[in-house]
Length: 157
Image: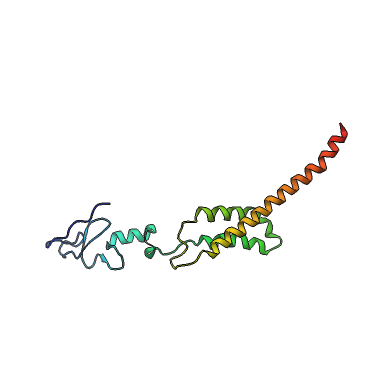
């Protein structure tokens, strides 16, 4: 990123060569007139850099049109299958996936508006408990199968 240039008395807009410049873009260093300057940004940006920030998501949350709320997504990935008796088996896949997703996206901003992390912690707790439940059930089934098969094989020797 080039350093912004100093704006002199004769500075003109890079797009409108006849209009005098009123600001220097902090991202690209180009001079911008009143038409090309974006007042909504701090530090000041030209219209092209502002459009690039909006299009790519940018580093400034004020220019972001939407954010994926991973805490809500993961919470519903665990809760929705649990609501139905027939669909509760889907938690075998959705609970670990939700746990992995929420842990990998932990540092992502949750929302443009300030929110607390209660949903995030609840999603981690619920997904962890459901995953632990499936693991305990799998161990119990393996132990039951092993104890039912073992005496028959030992007695046949």
